[in-house]
Length: 167
View 1 (cartoon, one colour):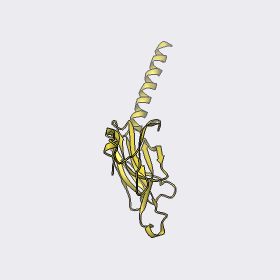
View 2: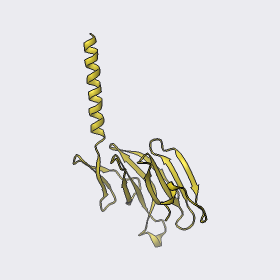
View 3: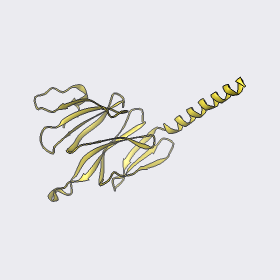
């Protein structure tokens, strides 16, 4: 009886390890096609097409974490100004891992820049109006929780996590 229990436990551990390994295939690269749809190419040769967000017309600033487990990108929307309809405004940051979107960050303004921080444990971004001062935010990647935020001032010295995000 005890031998069956031990054998069952070993089998469960082996299955869990195999499932986890299959789910965490490394991202080889990510790219947007001409329609703005994001493709994630995995190291095992699989190509995953990520469905567009509602109203999405473009994709920009695609980045992959250093461990090749997570990819992020900015979602482009058409400029509502008819004189600038050709211009895309980036109003959402999407993060994807293990076959699904794990986090979305939105702004009522535009994303100016973004990046992963702390080896992909955090995400940082700079948002604001088309012209004028913006806001820097640092978030925990797993929970989405806001860790720090700074409203931009011209004379301000920025902390390390925000400094390289300045336009």
